[in-house]
Structures are given as C-alpha cells and as structure tokens.
Image: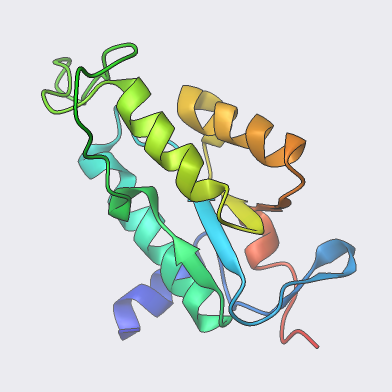
Length: 152
C-alpha cells in the first residue's frame, strides 16, 4: 500500500488493521469478507472507500469481496428500480435488481461483512445488512477497523 493511502487510513476512518475485533471475535486468515456501503449518488460510486477497506482487509489476511468487482452481467431484462447517479440521471447499464442479485449472491459466499460509513443511508447496503444478520455473517462496523491495535 502506498504512503498516501496508508496516511488516509491512519488519519481518517480506519487506522491499523488487526485480526482481533472488539467483542473478542476473531476472523481467521483467508476469511472472505464482503464490503457494503453507499454507491449510488456517490462520486465515482464511492470506489475509493471500497478500495481502502478492501486493502485493509487484505492486510489482515482476509479475502475482500468488493461489489465494484462483482460480475453484474446477466442475460434477459434488467429488473428493479432505476439506479440514480450523481448527475441526477440514471445508470444506463443496469437497474438495482441486477446489482443486488449479484451482490447478495457474492455476499453469501462470505463469513463476514464490513459496513462502510453512510451505510444506513443506502437502500442496497441496508438490505445487505439485513441479509447478513439473518444469515449469521459476522458484522464489522467501519469504526471497528481501527478500535483495536495489533490483534492476537
């Protein structure tokens, strides 16, 4: 990770990245961790935040699953509501249903999910949160990524 990204992490929302989380849960190396957060109406789909948290997960030895890297291709009609963009127009590639079907399928291959700042304001991340809780994934709040140093 380059110095600029590390500085951003250490001085903004994350800090160091231990394996031990508050509440004494431990995630083993190789654990698949889904990253959930707001995308629609965010500059560049909030890719910077997703990328930073994916890097932090990799530093812990976890395998991040970033929805920006999920294959959303499918055959047939797009389903669901229109996805708004920053400019007030709508996504011309897919609708919410296309993204959410693929993202939830990817999330269900994981043992844990990290929820980025602003997730409660996101319809998609709110649904992902409910699915993660119902399915028993370990929930990691963005601020928990910096509350514990070193891990054990």
